[in-house]
Length: 65
Image (cartoon, rainbow, N blue to C red; front, side, top):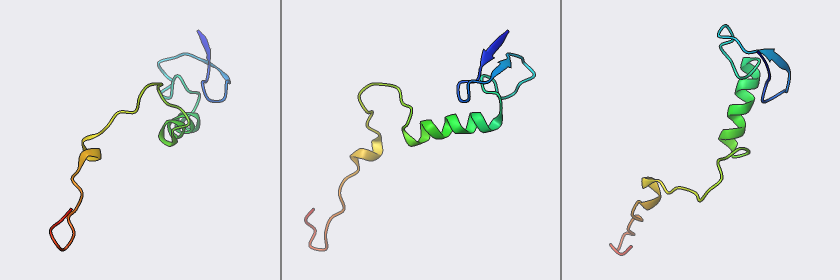
């Protein structure tokens, strides 16, 4: 079966021998990962809050926060 690389659209053979599938190369795989990392690609929906978002604010020297 032949498929197109999601990054460069080059047609490649879908094979268990291709460790980068569905990409044609490590470069295309890393380009895709970078797009997810920078937010260029994202799953639609409301942003999720992490436990780090709810950390208490540090108090000043006078003990009031």
